[in-house]
Length: 410
Length: 167
Image (cartoon, rainbow over all chains, first blue to last red; front, side, top):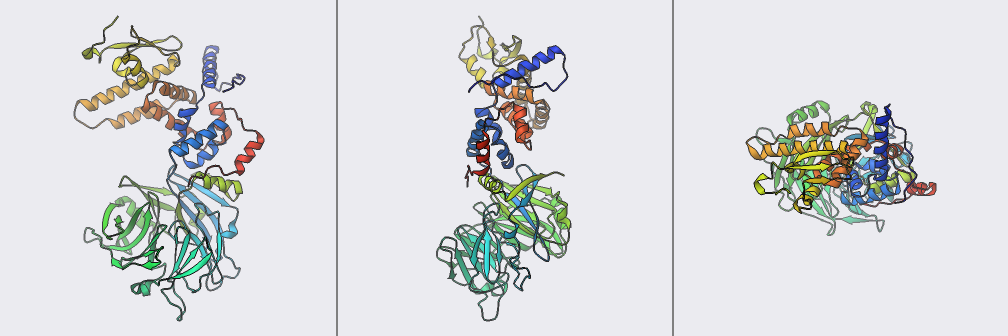
């Protein structure tokens, strides 16, 4: 390393001449042996993702160290992202994200807002408002003529496709790798309520698949069914009855339906369930008690072959109480999961969120208050996703100028 | 010439000399917290028990010895009698210990790296990481005396390119 001229920065403290000399000596020592190499990498592995971007711009040596430290320890704690939309005109009001690694909320300023908002000025009966599929961080807008969707971590890239053949309202929409499935939904009498179509982003074509199982005929919408998807498999769970079935993306066929059995301590029964994939695990979030009175929340792992359910843990009672108070009678808590994280929240008021990190099979619960005050307005509807935001995503976002991330202080 | 015999090792005293010629007398078991020093002592390189450390100045060495003493004692307590590890006590000690100014912190980290004291290095690195969080790029440069060696063109390119694709 080339030696630069030894300029001695101003010492911050007021010192006598003896202490001043010692300070100067220490500064000289630091300049000759700055933190670099292994030490720098060790420090950087402890930085959350957002700070890594700044760290990579400090100097060439730091840039290299950031790259190495990301290889040593890629950041895998997924962010919980909330998009706030105006209730009536569906315009995007704001967006924010919670980073569990640094436990901060970030405000996301979006440059290409038009991707998120309604296509038409006068919203037709089939309102193409932004929705979340709750699987593989897919956001979409579906209208009679257009189907647009995005599934990268920060929703920078939007795909536009023609709408599926069968027109329906409130269908199941799920992403399976590079394919997007649209199934069920309420529709006109002539159309099949169990119709299933799959869009391939590679060929840009729709394909009709085997219709959904008959048993789901009366509940084949996203209101009644919860989805969990991997790149090759989709699971649908009836939220109230816990009827479950699966769809294979390769064979494009449905498996048999089962009733999931959960062993809970009677008399507290599970009245509402949601599924999702936390990493490779198919996880069920079960709300216990009654719709008007939430008494508990449990997590189960569902075996993907036998459908046996194994309890992973339960939300601490104090947290359940907060969750119960945060929810109105009209809305049921919802969940989003990714990686090792399961986020639980009130879909009509995300002021307070709860989360569970699965560490070596054990549940570590936490909660966070959202400091963004406009969240509290009644005029809003919210769309939630959960995704692992990597260095590449942040770089892309900032390079295109389409996202600006600022830490929201309390 | 002193003989290093097994049963005396726990009470044997070694001397460490800092870069500014300060001499510290330390119990051998405390010295062994440093993997680097452990290697030196076991190889019996030193005919007397004085170990020179030209890379570490007295002020920092004194702090490091204090850390090692505290941790050695804490470990002895656990191995000795009943009761769980005094992890709260040690955690409190650690957070107070590392609550120092940036320059001392840097000194501790560099010394812990040279002396190979893993726990202290981890503690120091975490503290620095916490200090870096939310600092602007320029603040980081100022804190660590780092020269910006990117040309204006390079800085522009960094902002525009997508270097890391860790998917």
